[in-house]
Structure formats: C-alpha cells, structure tokens
Length: 121
Length: 167
Image (cartoon, rainbow over all chains, first blue to last red; front, side):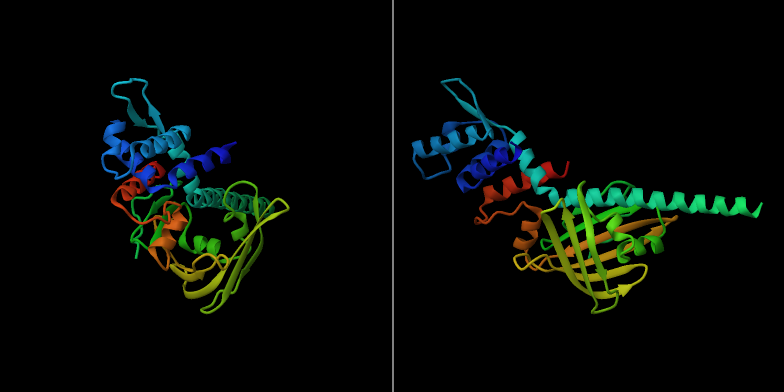
C-alpha cells in the first residue's frame, strides 16, 4: 500500500511543470489563473497537471467557484523525503546499534572484572 | 574536508553536505578513540553494528587493513536479498584517520570515504565524509536529485524537500 502511494507521488513529481507548480504553492496558496501565468501552455493542459497533482494528494483545491485557490498538501512529499532518507536511516540505525554494542561490551568487561575479584577472595 | 562537529550530542547523527559532491555524517559515541577505531576496522565487531535497519545481517566481512588492501562486506535480509560493497584502503592512521574507496555494483559511482575520529573526555566524535565523482551522483545517493534540467523552480522544490528531510 505504502509503495503504491509513493509511485503515484513520484509519477506526479516526474514532470517539471508540476514541480514548478508545487514550488510556487510552497510559497502559499494560489488560484488556477495565478498558477498558469508562468507557463506558455494552454488552460486545459494546466488543468490536466492540477488534476494529476490533486489525485496524488499533493494539492488541495477549494470548491470556491470564483477564486478556486489551490494549496500544497505536505503529507505525500513527506513520504518522498522519508524514502529519500533511507540512506540516513541506514546510518542512524547502524549508529544506534553501535551505541548498544559498545554498552554491552562495557558491561561484559565490568562483569569479568567482578568475577576476577571474586576469585581472588 | 569536513571538520569534526564539536557540538554533536551522543545519540544524534548529523548529516551535512559540505560541498556539492560530498555527504558527511557526524556522531558522538561514548567510547575512547582506540575502541571506536576497532569498531570500524575489525571483522569481529562490524557485523554487530553496521547492519542498518532491523532484519539485516552481515554474513561476509573481509578486511585487509593496509594501504592497497581490499575490503568486502555482504549484507543479507531473509533468504533472497543481498547487498555487497567493496573497496580498497588508501590511508590508515590509527586511531584517527581511515581513507578508502567504496563501490556498490557497476551501476553506482565509486566514492572516496574518509573517517576521522577525534576524542574529548573519553568520548569520540566520528566524522565520515563520502566524496562522489559528481554532484549528480551525490544527489542520486541523497535521493533528492532528478534527471531533469535544473530550472529555478525545480531547485526551489528540491530545497523544500531537503528542508522536510532535515526534521
């Protein structure tokens, strides 16, 4: 289930116009008109891009017929950042294990010393 | 070259990009440098910690610790997933500096990894810096790079994704 959502998100992100739209929305909500302004492509083409983004849950569209502002939805992007973080997750997990391993080695050393003290008595 | 992060706290990994070809990680551990050096260079220790998330083991850990010597690690998950990395040691200065190449299959770029260990009050700061052959290769490892041309708006989205990842 998780990987399906990720694929939908990546497919939505795999277009420079859609990424540019998201980047603009990162600055704040915008109307469809405002979003179309920078691009030399047709109205229907922009609408198609917005539908893809809305389907991926990356933007929310208000039902206000007059202004219809779109807003950025962060949750799918967080999933992308999460996936992109596998690299750092490997190291975070490994270093956590290193901490535990070092602690265990210290404990074993202390127990060994205590054992030796017992014997000397 | 990344400087040791003197502000690092135990248990917290810091990730930085000191240049557009590098990824650096810093972490503080509660052990002297000589012990930490052994953790990174001895097959009797490495498989106990350098295994990433739950479910992975390191069935192969071969280390020939001398300049020009080879190293090879194989990680395994379950019965069907394996990952191998290997490389050559370049500089070995115990207990403070280790430089080696690292390769992960033919499709991935070879990196030059530098590990620096500094000690204060019995605790060691580990700084590991990976140098990639290009920005694209480095970005691919981070997962933030995409193969399109770099328009301004794409760069802004890229920066936004990195901001989320840093939390």
